[in-house]
Length: 212
Image (tube, rainbow, N blue to C red):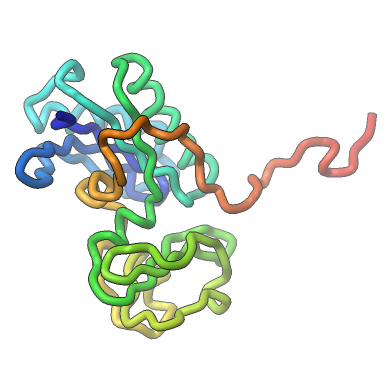
């Protein structure tokens, strides 16, 4: 049985590392979160080490890794996914990737719009009904996001208030939500694929029309 799970998410400004114990339910045994959109690389590994210490576990005690695959900004997202993949490879552990928006939406009830910061005055969004994603994920300016039948909005506090709906938690992907978002623990994990939803700012010379 997969019991002790290392959880990582860097899809938002919340640099999250946690140890979740799956037993009769889902127990967060150790967790460290740093809110800093520019410090994913610097804080993630120390957060992992601290979360393990809080849980009273060692790396050898882990059974699996769960990582948020976005959507999220290119630089921050790849830090978490590369770190999760490295732990999985080094420890011979299965690595399960999940949509980071699902980790928020799965902890909500009713018809809920989940949004996170996509920068460029845009948001990443998805629609949920009783914790199940029914539309998205996608990226758009806030005014172009389809609210549909949403009764509440969850996610980034600075962006949730733009929609004129009651705001509910959680504000960022939670460790418990990320673990709950894994569809099948017994199945072979699929390859990790980041949900960028748009191309990175950097372009090749060919894309910029530069010839040599």
